[in-house]
Image 1: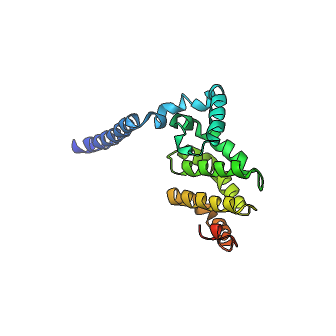
Image 2: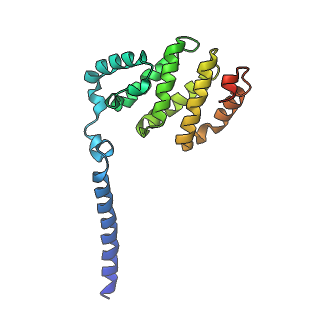
Image 3: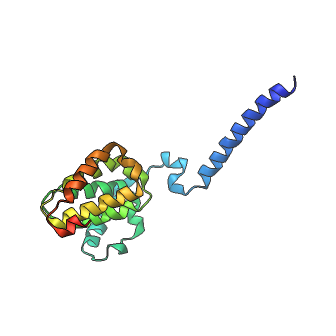
Length: 183
């Protein structure tokens, strides 16, 4: 009779241990993904930072080497992505600015900023697919490159949009401009 309650106790202990392990795992993670980020959300305070970010972003836009972009500026990914998406929605206009926005987006595909992708994936995808129809060949080619990078890094996100993405990509491969066709 003694073994029954103890077996039950063991189950509770082992699930408690699993919980403890999970908790210690959470605490050992980098600060930006710790459970505390719920209490302290940098986006709530982004207004005081963003004028600096925007001016730094504008300065960097005239810089050929975008890799000199300081990493701490990428803290506010969500705002940055929102700006990039706003720029990309200028279809058939502002070619240089949109090229820069596409390069920035490509850099973001290689970072582990999943919350940004959770928040903006659908908009990013739809804008990129629209951009495949842009009248500027270099923009079309870049949009394809960015799509390819997102597919490479986060294929699971495409499951609901596979057909749409494939159709648009196939259309892009009929492009008369070699630069676009070969992407």
